[in-house]
Amino acid sequence: MQIGAEPGVKRQERVPDPCIVVIFGASGDLTKRKLLPALYHLEQEGLLPEQFAVVGVARRDISARFGADMKDGILKGGGVEADDPVLKKFMDRVKYFTTNFDDDAGYEKLKGFLAGIDDKLGTKGNRLFYLAVAPEYFADITDRLGKHEMTTSKAPGQWMHVIIEKPFGTDLRSARELNDAINRVLHEDQIFRIDHYLGKETVQNILVFRFGNGIFEPIWNRNFIDHVEITAIESIGIEGRGPFYEKAGALRDVVQNHVMEVLSFVAMEPPDSFDASSVRAEKLKVWKAIDPIEVEDTVRGQYGPGRVNGEKVIGYREEDRVDPESNTETFVAMKLQIENWRWAGVPIYVRAGKRLAKRVTEVTVVFKQPPLHMFKSSDARTQVQPNVLKIRIQPDEGISLMFGAKVPGPTTNVMPVEMHFSYAESFGMSNANGYERLLLDAMLGDGTLFAHRSGVEATWALMTPILEEWAKRPPHDFPNYEAGSWGPAASDALLLKDRRKWFKL
Image 1: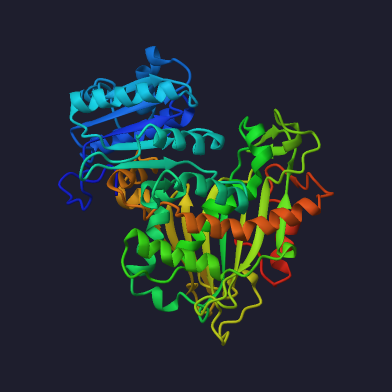
Image 2: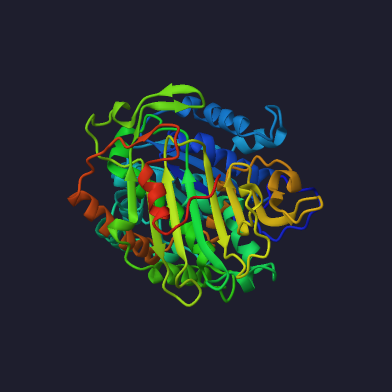
């Protein structure tokens, strides 16, 4: 979906049924910064039903200012003026309800409150519950919604869907326990485990790029590709989230979910169709084909003091509410091997971390060199380089292809050049934040861009043995990279032992 597309462009999306979006944890930052702006963008695009409402649910009574806070978030999200009549109409349908998440009486009152909106606005009993809460509340809220008969339809065609934020478990055992608890209340097709990376246009475009263009799919295999790199790094630190990050670390926070999802799109076989079950089946095959990851093929790091964008910053152990002797990793790199016909022998290198030289998420596909180097040069600048395809997910979203071209002049020198596609240049700037597609799909009941139970457990099955081995071998060199650098030296060594190096970002 292209938010802000030109008027008159034919859309393939259909408008969801009348419904109420109920956001648990609505007093948190996510609702103001992402969810309400995304819902309003859908309203601007004509992709919300006329019979629609939003109900924020939280423990704090902020009903007096909730509407103003949400309006402020929408205005800051861009693409709307304060006096826009569409905004006023939208805000009239934004409500607030106060209750403790463990209060059964509160759930009964909420049930009646929602029924009143059904009667007034004609929302027909359809619900999209969004659990924007801490993970420890996922199972309890779901259980109480079921106990108070808020997750089962009362009429033909009526639906109740539940979006659950990450992290979905902290290891394989906890993920299975959480899945079991939620599946006792909800059918799998009611559950939408959200990963906001899958809402990004460039991630979705990986599938279009691969399967919608006949030029690349024939060479997307071990015969032509030397290796693949997936990078998801940030220049910021933990942004005051010390208690969360101490429990999570970079592997749980980014690699098990975001990076593995991107990897599956890069490596999957063509699905039979682009429905949820077909796409999920092919993604699952990729994860199950990954060899067990040896701890020797992993690198962990933690940032110390340094400079980012010219400013001095503190190290991780000096961050607020972080153990001054913490062994939590803020950087991960690893080498993966997918043992199937397409990818056998092609190493996949991934890295993710915080307080690095820049913010960038990118897939780099490095193709094999031609078998005969006819254009040899003693000048390093004009030596033949491999063809490289880069898919930039954020920022400056786009795709570039590097290839060799002859330098003008009487001699035959070759210089690497780039062909570049930019989303902003081709389609214009967009105010979309990535949640639009996901919220729309959840209302429509389309789980293609959401995680399935089997996929969550498959990725945890890969990552849990690494976490267990790391726990047995505490690091002795933390902090081992300077803030503002490209990470620990061991990250470069991981590729050097294969006679490769990370491509410049």
